[in-house]
Each structure stands twice: as C-alpha cells, then as structure tokens.
Length: 272
Image (spheres, one colour):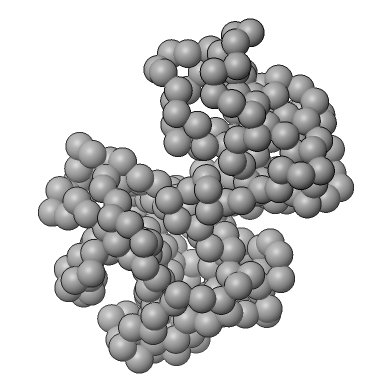
C-alpha cells in the first residue's frame, strides 16, 4: 500500500492479492535493522498466524517498503499488524522466490568472457552490489541458479546504476532456462531506450522505445512476465516514479531456472 505512513504499531489494510505486500514507512532512522512481529488478520480473526516472513527494503530519504509473503482469498479485507519484536528478524529468502543483495557473494557463474563480481564501489543498500564488467553482449555476463523452476506470472525487480559508457550501453537483467532461453528488461542511458530483452540460446533479440534518462543515477527496474504472454519492462526513478515502459507479447518460453545479468559495461545491480 503506497504512501501510508506507519508507526511501530499500526494496522495496514490490504485489498489486493499478490505474493508480497508493501507499505511505506517514512519516520527515518534505521528502520530496516529493527526486528518486527507481523501478524496477518482477516477482520478480527487471526487466520494467517504471527511472525510472518518479511523483508524491509530501504528506498531513499527515510522511506521503506515492508514486504510480507502471504496467501489470502481474493477480495478479502486483510490487515497487517506490525510491532517491534526483538526476535523476529527479516529474511528475504523466505519472502521471495529469488533474492540477492550481494552482501554474501555466492552462486554466480561467469558466462563466456564476461565478468560479474561483488563490488563496494557503488551500492544502493548495504555494503556490496554486483558489478557487470568487461566484454559486451553476447560475449559475456553472468547468471545464478534460482534453485527451482519458475513459470510465468512473475516479477523481477532490482536497482541499476550506470557510472560510465565504457562498453556497450544496454543494461540487461532477466530470467532464462538452462539452455539460455528467456526474457528480461534492457535499457540504455546513453541512447535513451527501454526495451524487452528476449534470449534464445543466450543470444539477444529485443523490442524497444524511446526513454530520456541519464547515467550516474540509480534506477528501479521492474520486469513482468504474465501468463497470457505479455512482457512488460518498467523503469522508475529513485522515488519510484515511472519514467518509461515497453511491452511485447511472446509465449515462446514458460519455464525459468536462472537469473541473468548480461549486456554492456560498466554497470551495477543491487537488491535483485
């Protein structure tokens, strides 16, 4: 639920069924470092238990999202009760099908001659991020196993930062199967495009449209794969204002086992 200010104890009413709900906290401080007790209720009845799995995302300027994974009936009047709790720490791996904030570097496979590595040079949150460096598409990059097979109706999100145009200028993040077939979001600060990236045996094809934006700025990337074949790339500024979007329809691939970071260099990804 966007733009709701919450205190340490307050009910948040949710009316939309998705995998992870969000609300905003803007009281400042180090909210994401505090443990919380979270209960999900339907009216006055606790039907979803307490100490739900959650993760707190630090946006900017003291703004946060609280993500909670719940499964609720459609059109239910669901509320979150959020209170301070010294024992229930956030765990994003219990909330999302895939999560990597790169604070621990593990599981990434270099593809061809590209290089993905842990960096402290630029980061959106925490102490580390992923840097895509050396060689351009389709000569390199990296991928990481999801550890399960995902279908459609998924959303891939991350923060992206392009410090320079040393190599090919498209930043490309998405999902593929073990043969390199899949989809993702691509955008270029230099040439001002946003697009849908299609991978066939790791090779790229794309559909793009004009979008004016600059390097040396953090952007929020969101890529949606819908069950009806629709693919949507959204690019937002640091305050989550939508800057541009590109959609396309393609039903060639329906199963995904890896997250990829391909494209040009240098650029940085965080909170994927």
